[in-house]
Structure formats: C-alpha cells, structure tokens
Length: 480
Image 1 (cartoon, helix red, strand yellow):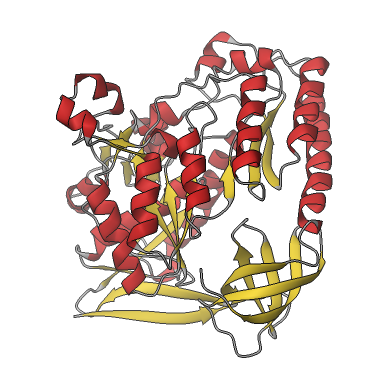
Image 2 (tube, rainbow, N blue to C red):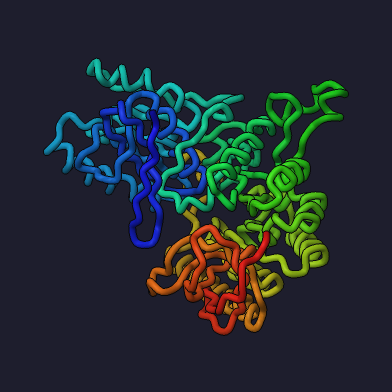
C-alpha cells in the first residue's frame, strides 16, 4: 500500500512518496541544473522499491545522497561543504551511508572515494538503476562505484517520485547527454552522447501527471531541440535508419504538438534550447498551441563572433539575431532569456562590448550570467590559457548584470495595464494574504488570494511591478 503524505511548509507543498512497509530513510539533495533535480526524482523512485522512504530530516537518514554539478568550480565547492556537514552528522550516526551522484561523481570517479573519506558510493548519471547492487556492496563493507556512461539509457521506464513539488508543476525529461562539444562545457564528458526518449513513454508520463492534478510540465534536456526519435539509437545514427524509420521519426516540433494535443488544458514549457538547433517549425508550433508557453530560454554565451568560434558555438552573432527576429515575428509577445559567460579565454574589451551590444539588441526578459570557470578536461582547459584577470572578469560580469537588470525591468513593465494568465503555485513569500504564480512568459506575479486556490489559472490585471515581479488584481478564473 502506498500513501502520499502532503505537508505545507512556507507556502510550498512537500509531497513525499511513502510506502508503509518501508523502514529505511533516504535524504537526497540536488544542485545544479534542472536535469539533476529530475534525476533525483528517478533515484527516489528506484530506492522506494528498495525499502526507502524520503525524509527532509538529515539527522534521521540511513542513506544520504547528493546529486552534483560540475559546470562551475563554485558548484563543486558547494558540494564539498555539504559533505563536511554530512560528516558531522555521520559522527553521531555512524551507520549512515553517504553517496555522491551526478556529473561531479562521473568527473572525479574513484578519486572521490580517496579525497572524501566520508563517501561510501559514487554513481554517475547513467548508472542509477545499479544503485541496489551498489548499496549491497556498501553493506558488505566495500566502496562502490559505477560511472559508466550509456548510449541508450533514458530512464523512460521509471516513474519518478516528485520531490519538493508544489503539486502543480513537474519536470519531464525527454533527452539525455549532449553532442555539442562547446569548449567550456563538461556535460558531454559527464553525461555522454545525446539520446532521446521514446515519445510514447513521455506521453504516458504527461497523462499520468494530469490525472494526479498537475497543471504544468517542463520538457527537459541538455538540448531539447535536438530531440529525435526514430525507433531507438543515438541521434548521430539517424543516417543509418530505414526509410520507414525516417518517415515516422518524431522531432522536437512534433513532440511538442503531441504533448499539446494529449493534454490541451496543461501548460507546457521546455528547456534548454541551443540556437544552432532551434528550427522555425518549433517556433511555429509554439504559436499554434495556446497551452505552449511563450518563453524560450536561448543561451548565447557571448556576443562576439570570435569568442563564439573559440567556444565552438556553431552559430554566429548574425545567425542568432536572425533567430531572434524570427521569434519576434512569429510570436511577437515571446519572452526570451539567456546564459552569458564573462571573461572567456582571450576575451578582449572589444569582445565584451560586442556582448553588451547583443544584450541591447535582444533586451532579454532575464538571464543567468557567470564569469568563466575553467573546467578540467574540457578543450578550453587543454588548449586555451585562462588569461583574463579575475578583476576584469568581475567588472565585465557586473556590467552585463547591470544591463540585464535594466532590460528585465523594461520587459516587466511592458505588462503594466495588461491582463495576464497566472498559474497559482504557492502562497507569496512576503504576504500570507497573496498568491504567487507565474505567467506563461515565466514572470512571477502576486495578487490577493480571495477565493482562488493553488493550481488555478487566474486572469490577473497588472497594476504595479518591481524589476522582476508583477503585482495585480484577479479578474476571474482563466482557461489555458
């Protein structure tokens, strides 16, 4: 018998999978990209069948897992600090086992067991189904490690346990790995080759989420626009597919259509896109369906053609502008967000000014901006000297952030006086009398609670705003 426990904490609903016959406690933390959070839900599902119930109390855990990120050095240092915390708890509870999952586990492999004496097992992103065997190794007193990358593992046969969810929005993984060898990125090395999940399993998950009351999904992958299903195999092998396989292949635009039509009352988002792979078909599909959100996260990383080439980004500045222009033409009210790196090796002041001018051209709704962090094993680390001084990196990042904040405020203020559709997600952090939710453009909006509930789509007339948050008054329930 399975029982779902709902607890309310600071306006968020915590939904934990709980089997009454299970006696062991699993504490799991996730860092980094949304894919890691999605993977943690897969891990929790696998371990539920091994006698574990999830817990939010570290001190009572029998097994502690941390799902890690290697995209920047800061992320790795955060994980090491958490391991210090686990170590303090383990001194009190020596029977507690500690495992490291994800990209950092794959990158460091057995070295992790040597460096962090507290760690009992190390598991890469494609090896989570081996967790029961690895835990048995640990119980027998042996260190356990499996970081083997797979060419076909998608976890499409695993029904994820939804962790720390608001009960409204859920992640649905559609691809794994990445074939784009950007010189700064460790993902192709830590997550392997790109492969797509069977669309039937995706639709089954979407339908299941709808029956459980979810109102929004995010189709997730390192590069969702490269989604391609033709009966199995890696994307690079599509040239070897039969004529029938090619004729019936499902690309990302078709998958979007299938999902939108399967659940027309469910809101659909997706992330992340790569400019070189986003097609006009995807943009037209977004425009066709009311339940596909008008928001595209479109990382560019630099505004300089020279730096884009050094990064092995397979698009130019002008090609990116053409894509932006096509989006604005087909979906005039589409929100666009970005990723940007300041201080990539050899970046000059002229390159930096190109980045600022690109920001001015697009005027993104919001963005994620970082200084360059050299990652071991990447082509940039092997071939390029990290020659931009940290002070210069920091100054350039500050200028990028300052300009983005200006543009974010500009884009947010465009909503003043308009009525927008908001999906209620939780109680506002600043007022127990207000709801908080997001518009289809992924902007947070707050409004008085009145008689509305979490999970409602509400029409909200915007009367005020901060740089990043809309404030309004509800005018009634809305359909998708």
